[in-house]
Image 1 (cartoon, rainbow, N blue to C red):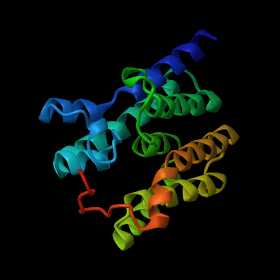
Image 2 (cartoon, rainbow, N blue to C red):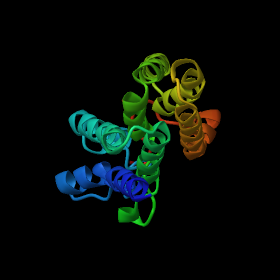
Image 3 (cartoon, helix red, strand yellow):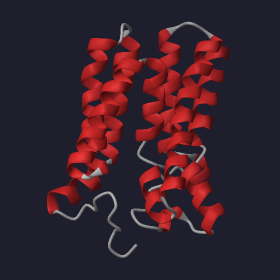
Image 4 (cartoon, rainbow, N blue to C red):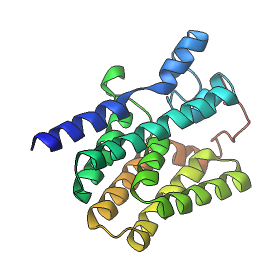
Length: 200
């Protein structure tokens, strides 16, 4: 039980570090939650501060997801423990206590979790994301597509049921967090990559 509590706490704390908020606050003295979409993720950081900082936040958010799972593997070999660690990291990013339990959408952190749990699923989901973004220039649509693809691929390329269930649930959370984006897509109001959001 102690191992489980340790892994859950570590996963949540690692996931809860709001790198997007920290980078923009440190670089420009701005609250990223009051800029552009109000999201603390890499895409909004890219728009607020620039591509280099957006990529840095992306890498940091991916790393905290992967590290959470790798720590769980170091603690023990139970696949369920690894899946719980990944879920804790995504929960920490999505509902970070540092920002009154308001965080990001979990895409980059989820990718890091996928990379540690199942590199084939991560590669397939990442490719789906890139193809959609290159064709449409909608990051949100790429995220929605990648989440759905990851949930399907998990049942083909992961040998453990806990991994499959966790990836499916994480994909559902990410899709839910993108509901406002989906509505803007339907209205034709979602900004494309490289285009500033109106009023930002």
